[in-house]
Length: 199
Image 1 (spheres, helix red, strand yellow):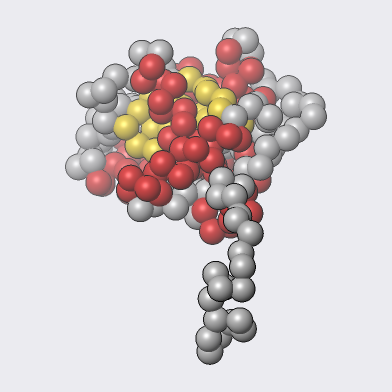
Image 2 (cartoon, rainbow, N blue to C red):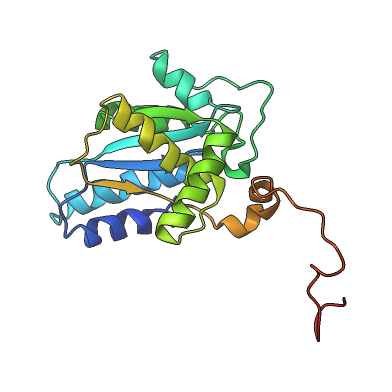
């Protein structure tokens, strides 16, 4: 958590000590989201930022959404999510140990919690790579997918200053992303070869 605080410091610095309107964070164990919030508290305590805080938004997978369900049901604790399924390893956490802190931060900040499907993650990841040249892991891509939902339902506005946190590179998930690129049968003439690969 102390290490994750540095992301909060970086957000504050890059926004010239005037925090953004919202921060979307892929939430498994939740220590990243908690660390960012802790950084904001510490910066306020030393007088570097004002008391204004961004909406903290926890993003989870449809197949593992203990924080989302607890938040939407108004509970103070997360319950164990049964039958966990998601390709995003960082979101595959059936019950965050510090779920009560995550929920408190979401409520205090006026934020929310959103779940997206694995397919939405992959779609958003490919769109992000195409538009921005950022190859995000499905965890970070989940935040891109969630942003579309939050803009559509009015939770966030088009003029809001929004930070999307990407916690890993897509290189870790090449097999998952490769499902979006069906392979054509190759003939001998289509094969590449040379010094490195045989024909």
